Image (tube, rainbow, N blue to C red; front, side, top):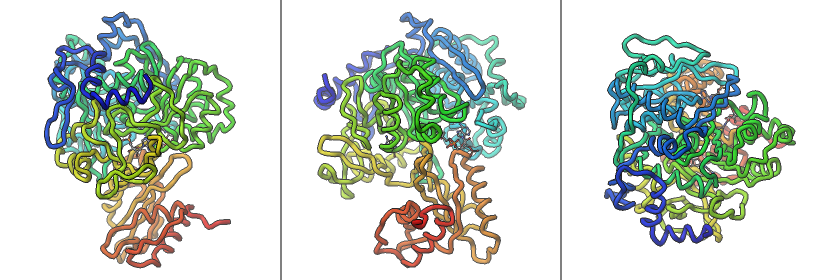
Amino acid sequence: MGYKDVYGAWREDPNGFWMDAAQAIEWDKQPSKALFDAGDGQFEWFADGMVNTCWNAVDRHVENGRGEQVAIIWDSPITHTKREITYVELRNRVANLAGALRAKGVEKGDRVIIYMPMIPEALEAMLACARLGAIHSVVFGGFAAHELAVRIDDAQPKCIIAASCGMEPGRTVHYKPLLDGALAQAKHQPDFCVIFQREQEVAHLEEGRDVNWHGFQYGTEPAECVPVEGNHPAYILYTSGTTGQPKGVVRHTAGHLVALNWTMKNIYNVDPGDTFWAASDVGWVVGHSYICYAPLIHGNTTIVFEGKPVGTPDAGTFWRVISEHKVRSFFTAPTAFRAVKREDPKGEFVKKYDLSCLQTVYLAGERADPDTITWAQQQLGVPVIDHWWQTETGWAIAANPMGIEELPVKLGSPSVPMPGYDVQILDEAGHPVPAGTLGAIAIKLPLPPGTLPTLWNAEARFHKAYLEHFPGYYETGDAGMIDDEGYLYIMARTDDVINVAGHRLSTGGMEEVLASHPDVAECAVIGVADPLKGQVPMGFLCLNSGCNRPHEEVCKEAVALVRQQIGPVAAFKLCCVVDRLPKTRSGKILRATMVKIADAEEFKTPATIDDPAIIDEIRAAVRELGYAKEPA
Ligand code: COA
Ligand code: AMP
């Protein structure tokens, strides 16, 4: 069957399609049907089944003869370490950790926050939660204490599992002080914290609250897998929205298992036993789905890579890892390839390695520019597949389904919708537009298994953010078009979200931080084009009248404030002071116009602008920052 047949089969009988896919999962109690309408635009999948994620990702492979297969390869060029963990070792380690957590009171439904770098223990912590039916929420290590505190207060965890430190090129990230700082700010306090002491840094443990990862496992019984309902939350993953308050995307257990397992063969074209590598971070959705869960559920070997595309030690690291561990499908962000290409444009490092094991490369997380795709195709000699998805969906909305059929690649397009997704382009009034016309990208409800059913503690926000604007549809927040052959093109976000080196960030969140500076009366943050990171944030500050401090000084403080409040990952370095911001007569800041000025794109001055003279003031300010340069 080709793509059209498979997509057609889903359209004809969605329930049958997903019930078939569900056969690949081992259930404690089979679900009676696939889709459950929970009312009010909310849908659940396999809700009356009983199942356990850890059983399906780990134990069943041991039972089925894969015990000696390597489950996780840890490759850490930054610490010069490599390690392999087989499925049987993983089962034992996860069962012991889960048993120790249970002995300290963690049960089904309790939340556990995980704040760890790219070490296998991060996956073990996730799986131990899944084993108990506890709901984990992994927080990315590049976030600062304040962001961690916000997530602690929202998720209200019984326990936090953290590492003593993370390793970034040239510096150690002191996780434990960040955790202590977050707990000092948070209203909610966990019952206890488990600290994994890395050999690079041994953190101080607070008596009565902190326990040592190894020590607290002595003398406890390993835990068995606890069956949970199909609609039991497996995890919460916070992602950026339009404000500083992140959205807690909820993932239900059964749909997650069924959908992710389906993608491994149909999209990524790997068979059980193959090595699959997603070079992302466990703190992001790509890390949840394709470093941890999907490869393990499908019986693959997954790689936990602690390093960077360049500098650890060189631009050949990716190729070394691929050839050494026989990676068959490789997934990364376009920004990582741009970093490699910048250092090694001619691919001298590529030539040093035998990459015959590599079958396909997948890109996601941000727009894949045609130059980067073409470069990667030429260097690697394999298909380079762009695919589009979001934290909310957990797996690809549009892709080239290599395990079904290799469709012709169209540069600039993540190809076609996957089964489960009825993708439509709508105009402002919610009407579908003709092929080739730009509009808001929406997905007809219900969304498929594995996608978000709601937001944690924020039902109303879920409706407002995703369902309200286009009744009957899920609003993706992306704008784009579909061509007459059904290929999708993702052009821009329709909200305040920007993508910095594949990291999803909220300019609204940064504005909230800048507005808290005592000298700032008003501010705006926009995302401007960057040749390496895709986008970087740029801040504009209007100072309080009477503030006559040097502008550079205030900007320096503003930059430091964002780093301290949100974290280094925000990469907020461009900041300037302006007398006023461009606004409409009704007071709305014209951010889209500011982006066009900074990116030196052609634009029409909006008819609603309060004072057109301000355009030149903004242009002068961004030129000071090295943007919108005058032609030489
Ligand atoms: N823990 C702590 N700090 C982190 C971090 C982590 N897990 N990840 C990044 N940071 C820090 C970096 O050290 C850097 O700090 P600095 O300002 O002190 O230098 C800052 O956050 C910005 O990091 P980043 O955006 O990653 O930029 P970079 O200049 O360090 O590296 C790339 C550029 C392109 C090599 C890198 O961004 C990259 O590998 N990107 C791929 C991203 C990815 O996989 N995204 C997932 C989507 S699929
Ligand atoms: P995240 O939730 O971090 O995965 O970010 C999701 C957003 O990243 C999407 O809504 C898009 O704006 C953008 N994105 C992800 N993948 C792609 C892609 N292949 N092409 C264009 N944009 C993408």
